Image (tube, rainbow, N blue to C red):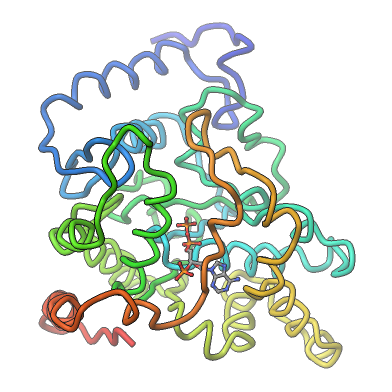
Length: 345
Ligand code: PAP
């Protein structure tokens, strides 16, 4: 189909002029697909839908379709991929500070006045907004830093092709993910829906019914590819970052093509990054105590909700012994399959 002349509404969403017919096509295929999908109980919306083996909110599915229809990655793009509540906010801060360390001084740093989600935006949450002011992909400096919760198997080929762009993935113990997610989404759950108990959330999580879940399939998709294509995906664990943040930052710099020089190490640049991005520092900043972040026109989140406890193992304060046993069993079953030596912790 011939491209329509550019209109103010159809420019710049993907860095190229958008064909308004194509926009309509995405909306239509979303409308047609949605009613035919299996549904499960939602955490924040009334229900989630299952699409190609993974679970999405109805809007999340639209975001995925938008990604396929409208996004053009560049080879220099850096993606942060994660399952929700695994440490995305923290890793965004660390990667942003590492990649941009020569652009900003630590005393006057963008992370001191902006939430990490502003410095490192969510690609799949903003794309379908059709409002270029939400995400100016053309205006982002190179390398573009973009994040996604989309499972690896469902990403467009343009993103997964070897040599196209790089990913940093963060994994976290699913027990802590579940508890973190339950706290977070309970705060965002609309008043008109009845509260979701931890027991219900646990059942849904175990059955894989969770945004971009099943959790284990999400992690495995990135984990397996990180083994096959180690230059494409760096697979990190929240627990390792907590234990050895300096080593993790150095690995991130190396992997992304921004290695720390000996002089930088001597000057304490790695320490400065770790300190800037620490839970205590970020949580206490005014921007992260008082400002509301607008993910989309309908998803608004108080920045303070991104910083709850920031510790390893908090799930033991909420889950019963049986719950812990069941989740650990699912994890062992999923991860210790033939040839897959994945160490959960
Ligand atoms: P998101 O998917 O909504 O972006 P995400 O940032 O992935 O959430 O995860 C939030 C978790 O990371 C929270 O964990 P908790 O509920 O167990 O406390 C949050 O506290 C933790 N977190 C946020 N920032 C940091 C940080 N700088 N260091 C360590 N943990 C952090």
